[in-house]
Every structure is written in structure tokens, then in C-alpha cells.
Length: 344
Image 1 (cartoon, rainbow, N blue to C red):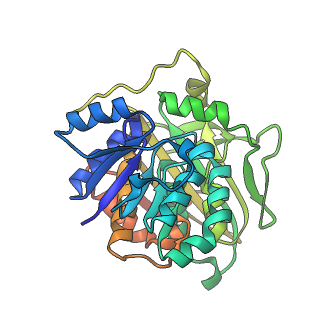
Image 2: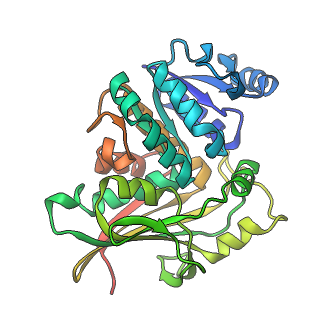
């Protein structure tokens, strides 16, 4: 159905994406900066095509010849998102990435709106666990558009991980991403308060009540792009943050044949309109592995024309959020999605 270049294919998330593309009947083309690693990975897969691509080359690379879509899995995305996306658009290929970095999303939105529209391609940064999942949940919880119903006063995103085994890419991104994080106040993007707000949140078991801290990821920028809201804050449980910050915490270890770790997650979005609240939640296993079906579902929809708009867009802006969540809930990673009134 399509040839999809995976930039950063030899990374931890990149391998999950390659597997998911193959499962969905697409043709992955392995790419990145490390030619020996790409060649070895191609051999592991029985001879997949691979193309080395150094971003230092500048001009749009021949690596994008005959490519229908590009999935960028190579962080830090502050360094890779804009050049890879720009090259993809210039080559007439759709672009998606898996960034959690707010500034990377903003740069793509700012610089590629007109070029992507002119090229007739979709550009969707943050189509991943961080960013995309909360964006899709919020879109469903607001019935797709705050313009068609009562104004959205507040959206709160809460994420809990039972542990966080960070990849080296995650650690490198953390060192690079020193930009002050953003929330929404009075309908506008604004810097997160210092010190970050703290709270508690009651998740379904096995998490239960968790201590939380304000730690917004790319979902704030994507949601704010297409869902007008007065206030938007995103929280992460402090236990997982302590794992991330501990240099002794090991990298993820595979515990099944798919390569997933034993990590569990829960993500909840609460939308408040006046005195009314609506809660929608997703839970599953391994935030890196679950990113693959999220971003590949986006690839499939772009390649088959199942989109709501064109050009640069947030996940819930360009795709039917309810349909995407339905596919994910029925997929091999078994994301469980509930939609119930919020508990006061």
C-alpha cells in the first residue's frame, strides 16, 4: 500500500514502528545516521531496504526517492523534527513523528503550514503516546470541536506509569530539552508556573491514588491548536518521574515476543464545561511499544485519504479521533478506553 521511511529505525521505538508497519502490510525503508547499524538491522529483518541519511547533508536527500510517508523516531526532535519534516514535504511525502517536545511541535507548525498545504501532504508531529494519545482522548471528550457546543473551560491530562525505564534516546532528549514547558491559561499558551503545581489523582487499579506534578508534554501544544480551551494542564505521577531522573534506572527489557517491557500506563483526560465534567481514559502496556500502533494508524489513514483536513495538523484535527481510538482498543496492544462521567 505504501513505502514508509522510518528515520531512526535502529532505535528502540523505531524497531516497534518497523514491526507495526510490516504487520499492517506496509513496506518500511530503514533510515538514520548510522549506516552499519541500519545494515545490520536490515539483515535481521531478512533484507529490508535501508538508506543512510545524515541531516548534516543539508539538501533534500535521495533517501526520500519513491517514499510515500516518513515516520521520524530519532530524537532529540528539537534537532531532527524540522529538517526531516521539511525534506519530507519537499519530496511530496507525508510526515509524522513521535515527539514529546513542545518546542519541536511548535517549530513544525510554524514553518511548514504553507509548504505542506501547497504540497498536498499531511504533517502530524507528536502522533505517539505523549502528545497524540491525550490529543485523541481530548478530541473525543469534547465531541470533536469546542465550537459546536458549550465552551470548554478546562482540560486536565493525567498520566501515570507504574515505572519508567528510559531509553538512551529519552535521556538524550531530557538533556537537550531545556525549554520552559507550556500550559494554557486564559485561552493562550503560557509558561508553566514555577515551582510546578502538585496534586493527587485517583486512577483505576492497579495505580490507585497517585501524587502528581505538572509536567506538560507535546499534548498541550497539539490540543491548544484545534480545541479552544480556557485552561489546560498536564500532570505526571511523581513515582515515574523519580525513576526517569535516577541515572541508575535501567533501559527497558523485553518480556514477551513482541519486545514489550512489563511497564503499565494509564492516561486520563477530564473536560470541564461549567459544572459538567466528562472523563475518558486509556490504559495499556509499554509507552514506547504503544507508540507504534498510534503512529502507524496515522500513516495508514494518510496513505488511504482518510483524513479530515490537509497540511500541518494535530492528531485529533486531521484524523477521526473516535475511529483511531477504536482501532487501538481492538489492536494487539489492547488499549482499554472508557468514557464515563468524572467523579467530583
